[in-house]
Length: 271
Image 1 (tube, rainbow, N blue to C red):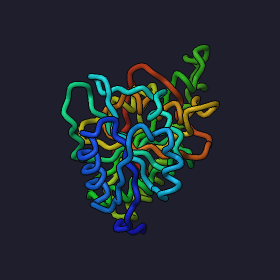
Image 2 (cartoon, rainbow, N blue to C red):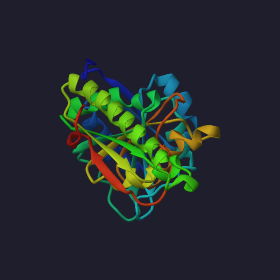
Image 3 (cartoon, rainbow, N blue to C red):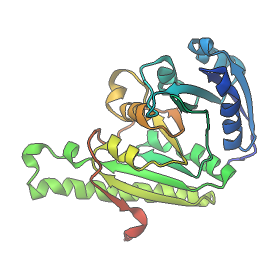
Image 4 (cartoon, helix red, strand yellow):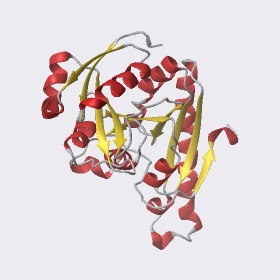
């Protein structure tokens, strides 16, 4: 089991100096005071990779403004830093016209897709959960409209693909749950059916911290996990930790509309 008392070196970039204090306090609370956090002027954000190397940083904290709905532009400089950094990035946002208030955190949400890339978020989620005595919620999504072509929508054999994916997804979620239970972490899982982005954003609530991986913001990676992380980053007002991962095959398919249904893992048999 990883030592939760191990200190983390972090670097903080706040778009407004008034955000330095609240953002720093939130990061310290999240890591149970085990963060050595140094603040840097926001105009040096373009040199964040160089600064991270020089300081041997294990965490980047970005405190950024958002619109009145809590949305931010992932194509901005801080968006690219969040999606492309080799160092985990904690993104905190302040909606327009609101006072900076971050936390408290009641639950950690980890989106998974059955890939080794997404699973790279699990050790950090476990550490944060143990530090804060927080439960973890795994979320996996299957979008039937992206798995079955429209021409085969009424073909019973085609829907066998969904059944196979469901079984594989429940197996992957059980494996992930077992990993956290060995760490003594309370964990639950939901398998969601519907468009990926809508399902993820609709099942995140106030008090959640999202921990997830990304493939980055460019090239072919945007068609898979990278694009999902980009959209979650853009529209989800909750704090989010984004980790850069290696490209692997996934079972999550992109989508935009409304979430269709949810299968809590604990309601299904384990046969």
